[in-house]
Length: 511
Image 1 (cartoon, rainbow, N blue to C red):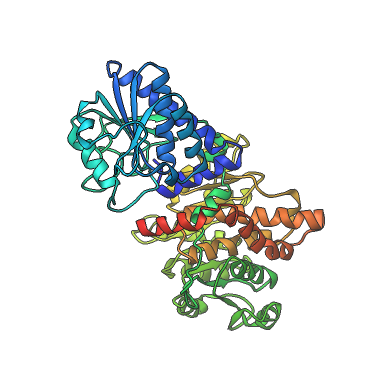
Image 2: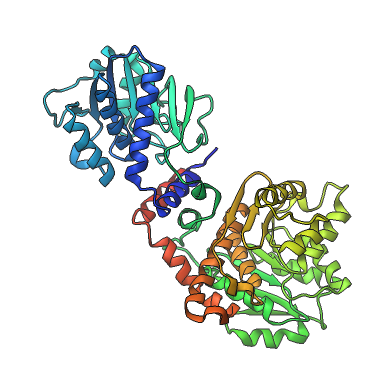
């Protein structure tokens, strides 16, 4: 089942992989026509209500195929032809018109050879609802509200295209059949009649792999009136034996859009870590390593933040692991667990497996490589990718967390969904790129991205930045090179969609 955002991301990913909007519209419209012929073979007079967007374009294609099949087809446009919004829909309107399909505009402001009145819908054997697709939200406005009322009053059976117009509102279309694309959409069940799921040529890779479309849809663009802290405040807890790891995570969080980054590191290294960047707010923890007596300080710092990244460069000392485990148990905001934090996660899981508290009631994204995954779960990952993905999904479900398992192909799962990522390169075996990944994921969580997509977008963004760095540095790239390419990777994805700002506004209005 697809949400609005997932459906939009899938379409964008498909287009990036070469499945053009026009090709998918042609396939969608043909699927609707085929369903009409199969489900209502005796219907001779068919009225197609078409909106001004791509849903209407699907209707134009369906009308053309039904006309070619010998049906008496008429189209009703909810808006004037010149108000059709997309190039694909405009082209298909002209194709439909070229086959001799008669049409009029519902408002009566303009018509071709006739004016269809409201009561004319009562004489139809079948009505096709191609007014508004899944991207529409909120209460219906004119002329769509009156179109829907006319369709519902007609008594004719209805086929809805993708979703019934007005889905989720009191005045929605009540179809006998809905032809939906890719997968069933959220909210359809019980409100869409018979649901027919149609494959319209979306590449499987667009569904299975993270793509730029996911980033375009799920990355939260800052509001123009936002203030410091509104776009994510991240705490990185780590360091001791190592100084670079927490700094890399912190800088990656900044480059992903964080407003503030705190670093909690042992006192022995705090000045070194602070020296990496004047942007850091560094909190020294007394001594040479993170210890249980520091948990209260870590918790106090975490309450200033919207997400925490824990474990980077902390080392595997037993007391450090105890401190990280206790911190994980008590931190209340979303957490990214990396490096030796994964050992602490294993310890916490064992300690609390028979208790109500524990990791299942926490929001956690863990980022293990294959060896760390085996340390966490006790199970080695198989070589076969399908079985490997199933194994990760099973363990994500058992643990109640989101797993981002790093590898030649990254596997992301929250126990229900699975995404793969292959965007990276062999140069990224250099030390520190995992810390960069953790920082990106931490900032996405801090921005409010749900854990599954925070992990998926982090894998894609980290890999995209790494590929940009590889173009310049080749196999000599460093983790710091990847950090500096994060802004370009984000911009490349986000600026490719001309409809991005409008789409983000519509999604914001629906939430």
